[in-house]
Length: 389
Image (cartoon, rainbow, N blue to C red; front, side):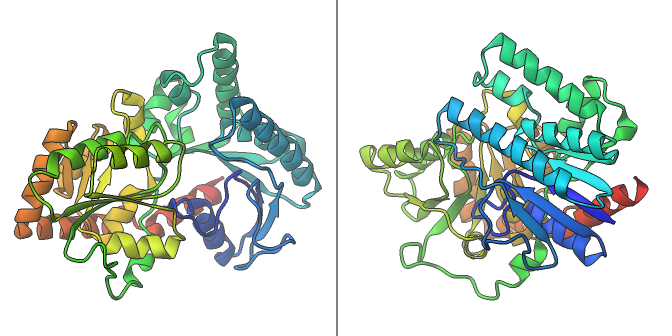
């Protein structure tokens, strides 16, 4: 069986942890499926064959978050057209599998499924256009209406829809999507990556510090000013606590400027790293922090990779929002949800001083990763969906 896999941002080695599609594609290939991937990301090689039995074609679509709105729109349509052409040239396809974002990836996915008369599995990683509309990124009524119609057109023409969280599932149920058409496959805890880190590594700057890490995108929705506000609360109380931010994004320069202007010597902002180095940094840390701009409830439905990385590494987790992750943390005692910088600062101080509580949360995190969110469990769920279709 041959699967045509559409993902505009397909990566085999990401500093932001975004290798879900690669993990799925490789697993399917290992289980006898032929997988052809069409991505916009530049391939490591100049031809279509990649390692691990996958065939990856790149449309070489230039894209980054620093581009203007119109330049990003042009990039979306560049990918749509090239993916459609390449997809039509790919022979003997049995299933089309597309993953968002962007939502526009559904256009070539649906058209290819229709033209080739094949079934479509559509994966929703973020509920678009709800997120950009509610955050004010899309304030044109015509554009909002068009994207909403596009969303329902994609859902209508999908044989099955995968979402990444209970919140996303409930969102689609409220929109009238049939429950039997939906499955939840959360992001995965890649246990083998963390098990391969035998020795924790500490840079000399981090030596002797209680490290609170936030790896990943530094964008508007990530709300990383919150972490700096927490650091500001703590700096006068404990000099041994350090906040480590690793990644890229359109808010990075703003954060660096704040650190300098406010003399936040307990904050270290580093550039993005390859996946294997990020894994080492996470496992060498003491606590994982996740935050969003918590004025927007829609962001509570996120299923960010770092949450599952923290679980795999056995870290206590602190978040600044509610939703399904708050419920999981409280039910399993893996961490806490604290929605103000003052509350989170107090909790960090408590965890630093209470080794027994920290060890308990750490063990619970790892057990949760193994029993519910392991990469093996997620991959088997996908394989079952494909076999049923």
